[in-house]
Amino acid sequence: AKIFAYGIRDDEQPALNAWREANPGVTVEFTDQLLTPETAKLAAGFDAVNVYQQLDYTRETLAALHEAGITKMSLRNVGTDNIDFDAAREFGFQISNVPVYSPNAIAEHSMIQMSRLLRRTKELDAKIAKHDLRWAPTIGREMRMQTIGIIGTGHIGRVAMKIAQGFGAKVIAYDLYKNAEIEAAGLYVDTLDELFAQADVISLYVPGVPANHHLINADSIAKMKDGVVIVNVSRGNLMDIDAVIAGLDSGKIADFSMDVYEEEVGLFNIDWSGKTFPDDKIADLISRENVLVTPHTAFYTTKAVEEMVSQSLSADLAFINGEVPSIAVEY
Ligand code: COI
Image 1 (tube, rainbow, N blue to C red):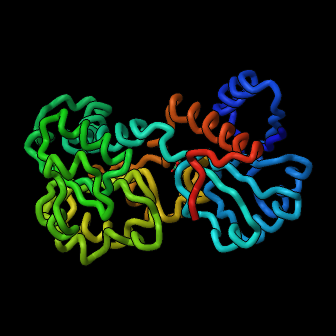
Image 2 (cartoon, rainbow, N blue to C red):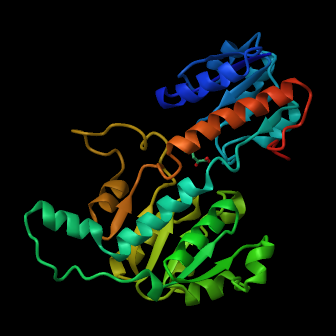
């Protein structure tokens, strides 16, 4: 069996080497280049590809892979929103993702950011850096005093709920797909509007599918409590960022943390030091003391990277062996 992996970063190589050692009969070759219509031909002669990228898997890219003899593709990440599934179906692709590489990685990050917002650590750090060691006016709020509204109760949302409960917060949740345990605990509200009306803090754990496009917009923000805190570690397209900025300007939104941004491709995971950001909105958001921006790093832990690499390579191998891995994407 021969697998070709695209977009391999240095931090993924130890996990890739460990998987190779555990699977001596399998050849795994890789490049740091992303999968594009041009680089697709590098996979000719292999049985499957292994990929992670935020660039779209376009019809053209999938056609080029198909032309190179490849119809098995394992993603090292969870999101599949950048795949042209119509084209994938047409070319007969078998695709897998890694839905559960480490829900804790993302859930923990969201709760850390939520805590940082409530305790105003960005302001405090800035004061301390200026040698101002006074308390006031940087008074914080306690988690246990908050009603935390969790939108999306998949693997990640559920870990976030447990962490929030550990802090003693009141947790409420909304999801179209109900989890039995959360339902039994009576934590679901029936509508998003109820969640917007009740939550002091809102945190998102839903995929960036078209139905969720701009879930957070001027209308939904208007339904939220004054001084709401919003955390997004899921997908940038869940928010109309202009409406969020307007909410921050008016004070309707007191604090905001974003790990994802609709226009993040070509912006995040790039060193802009000494340069001007190509995007005025991100520069504005980063400059605000009540806004925390991280560049899509919620997932980025040693455990998550290990799982992303090993689970996706095992899925590739299952496809090659004519099996359907448990993490195959049904589409
Ligand atoms: C995903 O797994 O879909 C993510 O958003 C993390 C990615 C940046 C590797």
